[in-house]
Length: 240
Length: 126
Image (cartoon, each protein chain N blue to C red):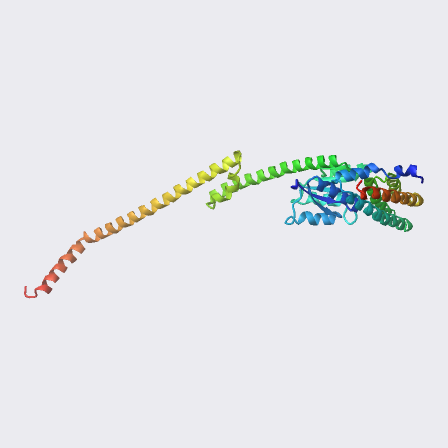
């Protein structure tokens, strides 16, 4: 079955951990277990290994409990939007309230109901996907504004907007228009540079011609030419 | 405890639910029962040691975990006793928690016997 989401299960009790892993796996999720908060944070921060969509977090655990783990997740910029579902006993409602105040997404009472578990996971996954889309949108808006700055300082490359231009919405349209206008401005600029270069060559040639004319049309030049003619005659016919 | 009280010690529906939720794997249910029996022995020993040392916090953590696992496998009587012991420990009332040890030991034994019977049921393909 194709994994419908990456779930991190943080539970110190081996019975409950195994039950959660097996139930979620049977529901089609890809599940990774962790025995306490410290191990969970290591796995969450090792993003190259796996990127998680939801965390199921027990409250009472040795080494690092659910409170400290949740606090660390919410304080980490790369993890702060990650949905965290607290796993609690029915008599721990005060603890759950505390966790929700600290930023927990929801909670699940033990013994968990598999259908409720799936519903809470799906709800969290939907919220996360929407948040991911929102973050991606904001990132691409930032790319557009960066592109505008790059145009101003002359460092713009149209390729930096390729992924934004690939969107099928208004932002994508804006990026495509931006790329086209930037290409047109670049092409016009290159044409102007070429024209200026050609004009400069023409100006240089005219200047040379004028300088030559200024010399050849001067009295001094005429006198030199006349004297040179006399000298040529003398050399060719010394008798005359 | 006689045979009639066995259902109160273990709720077989909890194990049936585990069987259903995990894809109908009897071997897995047997594995969970074994894990529970091992874990319960360990937690109960830790609880007794902590009570002996007057360490209510550690004793409370031990019975908290025991309570959670008991609830999951349907060991209702043990879960209730563990909850009472946990509350006493959280209140720092080591004497009350200590007074529950004998009863917990008895119920723990009954739970183990009931679960081993259930294990047979799942091991035989349910």
